[in-house]
Length: 529
Image 1 (cartoon, rainbow, N blue to C red):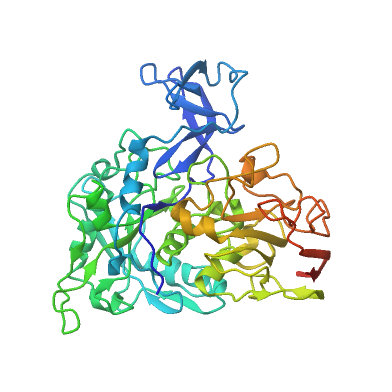
Image 2 (tube, rainbow, N blue to C red):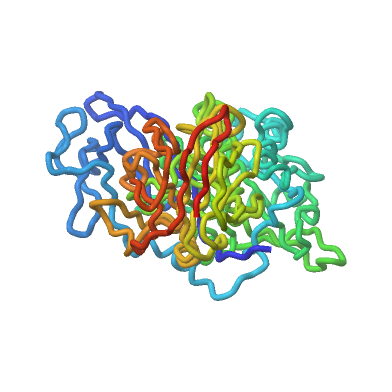
């Protein structure tokens, strides 16, 4: 079983266009950026905005001497952005913002509840639905609706998702008790979701605790301890309404994964872990519920989509976020579940989340990369949606070594249908960055004319064939120029091409991919070393 030090891990903001209003009645379009720990708004052309607390007008944002976002004096819709202003402005993280994460990262020992779920076989997952004391009649769904979207067969459910991306090595089930609810919380909606000044929710841990406590009479939690350590592996909580990641209501709860004990230690719960009444000879003191994920019932006025559930459960399996959690860049963007690929779609954001990237599948044991130790010619690489074909240049493991992984991603079928393009993806991996940075794997971007790659770089980086470095520069979350050959028709990747296969320290790697072409959904290439 894998072990990690558990910290709060949240979903990135949904790529949804909102209409924001000014006090004079005028309105404009905007999108959210960030995640649970720091988030805000920007115009559709990428300029960060903040609301003036006194006048209630939305202004283009600038930074004060402390690095905080403040109104610039130029009102959105009335003025243009200041000439000196750059797009995608983000605040400097303060010690108060970092403290909740820092406290969990410094946990000296691992308890059984901080172990991650084995990514093989079928995992039973308890799913609990809960509404609020002031919204008892506002839910739009039933337990059977969630049984269907999470555990149905053949309807692009979360079960279908994990079976496809793991090549049938892993599946999920609602277990003997099925989906349970709706239960009613003791407090109002806003009690749990009201934000601290820095943006994170006040009492989500209390809502989770109450949901588990009420469901204890209906669920035999012993059947959800898949590894028999007296800890329920994870509970999935569904709350009434929307998630803050997709709404314009700051009192909604932002979807995330965490533990009840960590929430209490960090001041986000009055309770801590819950001990169930399901004691037996194996666990005479009862089963402990600690790890949880929490997601919304609704999305854009209808039933929620599966992307957020799959992303948060990816954390339960041990995967880190692969977006930039300090929001200065895009990480791997739409090319993977653990970044903004959570929101990829066929018709509604999140209804076709992207496959986990090749590194994530390697980490979970769902693929075994074939290491290229001598040149291979005219290699046929099948799409990741149907085949576990992954090749590796240079030695290394999921958390060790510097190496390259290649895979074929096809946006014409399966859950990858929402990708921004098709072709050969080349991943540049640095296991030392992954090991040393926990959930900040992709926070240290580098690019030509920007931060030096010899000094800092992503742990899991997509080599973009068009050499534009859009992901690192935060300019987009992926496009059809990223794969090989892509719209720029890049048919080779060597030490002398742009982009190059050089190592981060500037040395040549001595590896290459040449004569890259397509044959239907397959990629044909020479793998040279």
